[in-house]
Image (cartoon, rainbow, N blue to C red; front, side, top):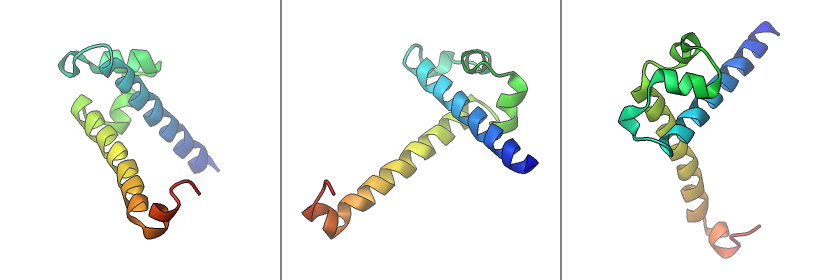
Length: 89
């Protein structure tokens, strides 16, 4: 049970950090965003950030990877014949 809670907390922290980073990207240039900016926005500490990401670049890459995975799911679904016949099941 402890591992489940720890895993849920880790996923929550990662989600909060990614959301904070995404919000900051809409407000300032990528090169101006710091770990302190992200952790302050996410209301988490630096240790939590570094438990999940090596750097701002690592966070950005993982965020892009997540977006790409979702995009691939949509593209794969769109390429299936049944989707083309009925795109709104």
